[in-house]
Length: 387
Image (cartoon, rainbow, N blue to C red; front, side):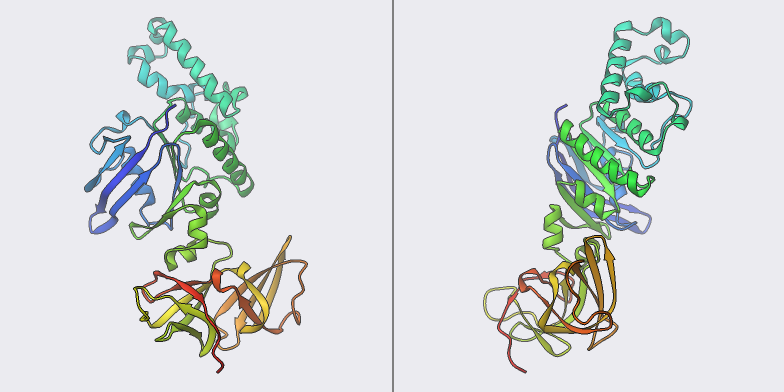
């Protein structure tokens, strides 16, 4: 199976007055696992359906390995789609479900009929189909289930059958639309490992739609985070976590959610919160000393906060321990409506215990600054100026 590249250029799509996709440009590398992630309604499933040929874009093109397939029928694109609902035929065995796409492609209508087909179908073709079904079933470790019906299978087993039915076609790419969302949490975690292992073994191109950031972060080579019909940021999981390009990305990626503080950027780039200097400086957007001044937002990850001799004055509201981690929720003394979550190792001491007042410090190199427009600004440490 030769992995294929995909190219989406200037794709737009509207449903009535609702502009669902807004000039999407996206290049997907051969053999890449790329996730389209975002909140419901952001356009990720519509984009996947356009790639599959199930929807037609209003503008733009879709290419597979430099072949324009924008107006090509879905059956001619050689793409395999795996749905959330599995879409298995309940009256067929697992063997028959997996064989269906091959029988549709390789056998005539008459040869597919239940009775006459057995007499006129070429024996060699039937043997090839049987061999392909066995290979796909063995790859997904469901060879022992081939004679069962879907009703006799667990959710995870049904998902593997759906994957085997896609795999048997040897497609140019696998398109997956939230295939794990119907599974319970434990099985979903197991199937994430299965899908990642399958991708490594096949070396095929995977395009995966999900609203679950954990799925996207743990399985993907790259993530395209979508918002309001556009791609907010495209990059590796580390890119999106360590350098979110916007407030939208920062809020979506990370557990617990990133802490966001209202701050002010002074004329010289000096950053303050509630009148208190934070030891940070906004870098100029262009050459020269001038920089954007005015309101901004500071983002701090829970693991980047720590009790310190100086910093943000906060009062402990509650402390929760989850295994090796402790999550400490604090409210700022200057504005109790602003709450901050700090992650600690469970073995670390919490100064003063519950209801204590402490100061929270952080590493300037790990801080995230966003301007009034929500876009990322560069930030660096600076010497504190005494009040």
